[in-house]
Amino acid sequence: MAEDTIISKRLTSGRANGPVFIVLALVAISIVYPLYFVIITSARPNVDYLRDPFGLPGEWTFDNYLRLLESYGVGQAFLNSLYVAVVTIALVLILATLAGYALAKYPVPGAKYATAAFVSLMLIPGAVLIIPTYVMLARLGLVGNYWGLILVYVSSALPFAVFFLSLSFRGIPVEVIEAARIDGAGFFRTLWSIVMPMGSSGIATLAVLQFLGVWNELLWALILIPEQSMKLLTPTLASIGTRFLTDQPLVSAGLFITASVPLLLLIFASKYVMQGLQVGVSR
Amino acid sequence: MSIASLTSRVGAASAAPTGGDPSAKPRRPGALHKKDRVIGLLAVLPALLLVVTFSAYPIAFAFFISFTRTNGLTFEWRWFENYIAMATDPIVQQVFLNNLKFLIAIPLVIFIAVVVSILLFERVRGWKFFRVIFFLPNVLSVAVIGIMFRNAFGYYGGVNQALGLFGIEPVEFFTDGNLAIAIIILALVWSGFGYMSLLLFAGLTAINPAVFEAAAIDGAGWWKRLWYITLPNIRRVLGFVFIINVIYTFTGLFGFVFVMTAGGPGYDTTTIDYLVYLRAFSSSNLGSGAALAVMLFLFIGILTLLQNKVFKLQEED
Image (cartoon, rainbow over all chains, first blue to last red; front, top):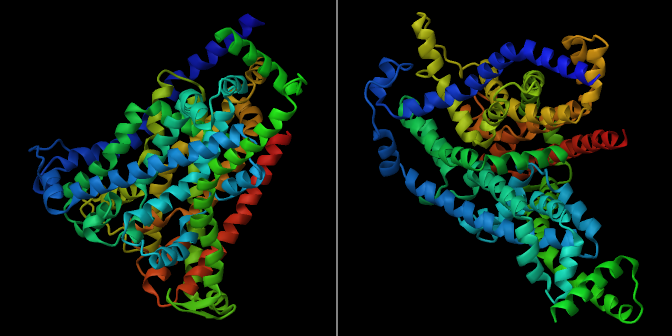
């Protein structure tokens, strides 16, 4: 019996191995090649691109990047995006850690309703919210102000963040927290020295996911920050993409600048990115 | 000191669940409990208030706006005027039809995702690496993906350059509505199948391997096992994937449409969420956009309930 299963396993995988690998490799190439094309194109002059778009550049250059940074405000936009993303992540992590810990380990009155509110507001599409939110923020004088944008980002990230962290904090054994509390540690002490270290992997996962979300967001960044010098990276990229239809290398450089940060995260934090995915599944 | 605290710790841990030790406990847990409730509430409150202010309240506000004629400053109550106008608006009808066209992406995404997930499940050499590669488009902004595809299919783009190698004249992909929709669908499939295949892969790993072994011993071939075991066992994940894709098709296309076609030519590639944006920032009456948004909200709500039902079925089985 045991021998049979081993043999059958070996037979099936042995038979399917080659073709399966080839198909998967082809699919992988269909994903990687366009990105490779963008990167190569971004590193050559337009004339060189038009002469032979699929070959390697006859002349390598950083001019496209320099032009974007010097003349089209991409450097500033990059920093703006970074600022908004970092502030948003910090606020989301603080608020979601507090709420997540309380919901996981404290007898919060009406916890059921709070959780229901968070869960039901998790998937509200941006299109539904743009008109009322814009009117509301305009009245508060928060359009054209990063705080308006950050508040929108934080509040749209919180439902998932709270849900996610309360799930991962629930896995921390009650005995450990109880023991610390008997020793006199209060809410913040247990949170800081037990819950956060033990839940650090969940917190890191959340930070990576939320960073990607904010960095890549387009709709809110577009409508809430009309001021040119304050623009974030994605709207800046969108306007460059529309203005320079005939200059593929320049646009490609913009694409790579915008994609570089998420790609770096995927390379260096793929563990956390993939972990976040698992939660998406269980949801 | 340390021994005392240790014993009290052990005592508390073992006593807490049963409510035990009558000498010290009965009063203190009550007081602690009350304090804990307050602390818990205070910890949840900031997050809850923010979410209510910036998510729940705007939804209610959207309902209100949809019954008014407004420029955002003054509101004139007009009952169902916006809804009636919407029902007879040819643009809305066309845009809804466009959204139905975009649904073609779903069977394509699901088909590719099923194939890829089943192939990944063979766990050939390097499958973990492939998994990360397939996930790659998911970390990119729709702005990046959209512009990449617009570039590739643009007049000077890679596709036309490649056609040129075969002596074919450049094609203006974005001047024809249906062709433009096809390109956007291609972008959707390219960027979407990876995540879906990983969802399906998780569904596959949940199948008891003994089932496969039993079938293999009974002489069922690879295709038979696929058809009678693998696919039936992931049908609930398939249902889930289907519904989240429908929701995405009706709410998540703004970015693609904005950077690839700006809704044109005419309204040929405008989707509902993009039309809400257009009505919000280029029309004098926000009410009509809000009415559209409310319809979208109700539609998504129904789909989500449906999805929850599917999810419940999954738990019952």
